[in-house]
Image 1 (cartoon, helix red, strand yellow):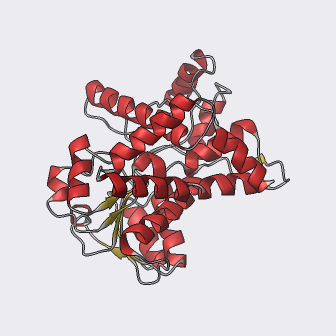
Image 2 (tube, rainbow, N blue to C red):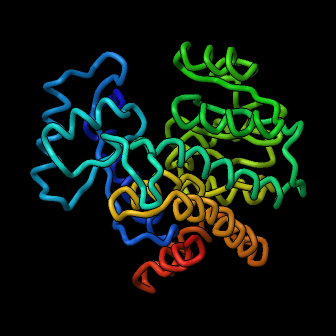
Image 3 (cartoon, rainbow, N blue to C red):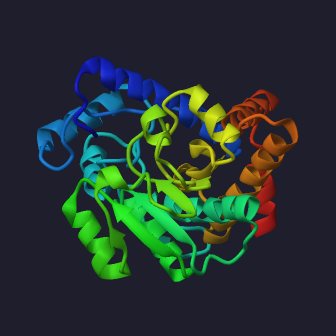
Length: 320
């Protein structure tokens, strides 16, 4: 949910997002397709029961061809409202896993943890370090996922700089984690090791690249590259970009197990496998000289064309 300036802008974003979801599911080895929905409106002031029920009715009209879940601007409360009108929603209620443990319906903690796992792999590849103590990280956006990532990083000893357009978010990051707060327009140019975009898409563009200094870019936002050329330019500048739909797959992995069943160990193993996927992307890119975004697309299409989702079965065997 976002206050798009026009229907055309919303349509462009949802098409980019749905493409990313398709590739994300393939790359994560999931037996899922890919789809996305957007709601035009301010997520803080534009919600009403009538709007949320209308969204639930629309999802229900698709008869299960599309299953919705929380994302930027929505959370547990919105999923519960959708669930009053459709059963084709995940994340509305806590669920009991096969091992008897109870997990929240909210997939954002899995997204945040997956980004943390992927960020560590990117740091290992580009900076040659396994420990995150003293690592300087700039996080753009500290909503549910960004704040979750910040908590993991803080626990690992990283130093944090954060920015968000909502004052309450940065105040929580500052009060809870001791993060340094900067203005949204200043987050790009900080002298840090990692830039972690966890807000809206298109933020890696010609303007931001003029000031972006971090050697590693690893964050949760979807569609981070404004264009394919930006990925090529990052490669030329030796800035290692963790392709967004590879690193932020933890949420859809969580959703997959919500729909199909599984244990906490299986979910954990599958989310941790994000590191291996990124390692393959980084190594292929280094060997070929191509940018990581091109390699990620190619690998996702390879897995899509191969059919099925062998990674799921492999991880389930490993975790059982």
